[in-house]
Image (cartoon, rainbow, N blue to C red; front, side, top):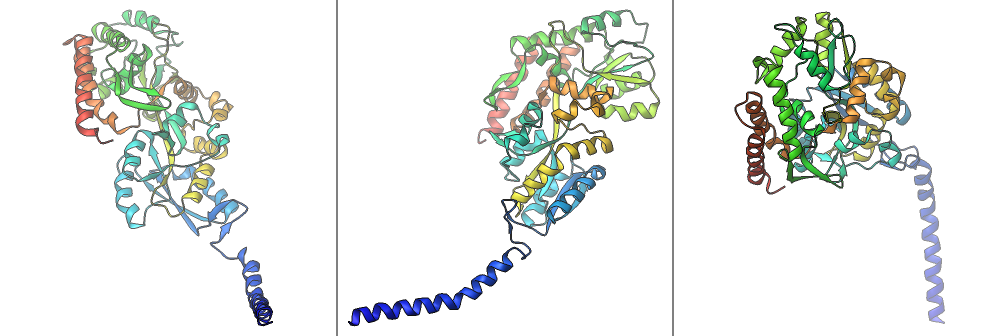
Length: 429
């Protein structure tokens, strides 16, 4: 009897307690959808922040403003942006402001810095649906990937192309051998073609076109222990570079002053064509030169030069407290609509497949040259070990260009230096 009485008493108390709590739970349920900062179930994303911050490259914010406006309208989150020089200020400022909690949620970077930033813990890998990554060219997504993880979405691509003076060249040669023959027929102090092939950024295009490579790539991962800068194919490419320096290029375009010497000769109307990037367009416009641009001609082996591709991307700070929403913002500002606006406002070419086929780029010869050549190139390696490559390869190409050393010997020496420095400086990576 006492046992049943106890059970009934406990049940009665429990019902009373639940009834007392019910109004409070109902009020919480009714107010859950109205509370600012609560999770947005329709988005399947975590707690909605009041504000997100973007760090954009200097003088490029004009292309970002429409994307921000449409994101704010769709999601009700304020977005502000700050312009910083991407090449010199962005990383330095992130290292200071990020840990202090005053850094960005989203920032833009050149892709070759991704590896170092990831190792330092400054960037967060992102997860997006395959339907998002499929929008972009394979090379541009490869450029945004480090150690098998995606660290951003592509913003813009650039690569060297063939730029020619229309007064001196009416039709772009199909191959470099035709260009070489034309160069032999130029008058004193005039040149059919010039390039800074003693600079590894440009010279690698020829070596890679013959089959050389910097680091071997296996399953999307670069192997810094497998160098291809001195393999048989790379040497063949270097021999072709040496041929042009011996018989066509003037001695003045070797070394640090080579770029200004090349540009000066082209603007003086003494050069029919040159290898340079879209960054050269503005100066040519200002100089009033009637120029055209095209993808680079074929090499004697029937292959196209494999230029280095630079891909600027949008990234999520590892110190952002709103990484899911920051990723959503990255997807938005990097999408097709906003990529097209970016091209219209800045002439930066988004590596979005549909836009590369869109008349806005396809019918613009200067932009199309970059778009086509980008698909024939390879992303600059984005691992920190790449820092050990530039100087030894520049030294090797300079002694090859000046005929001071045989290509095989020069490249062997460079490869040994690179391997040694990687072992000394990156053995912990």
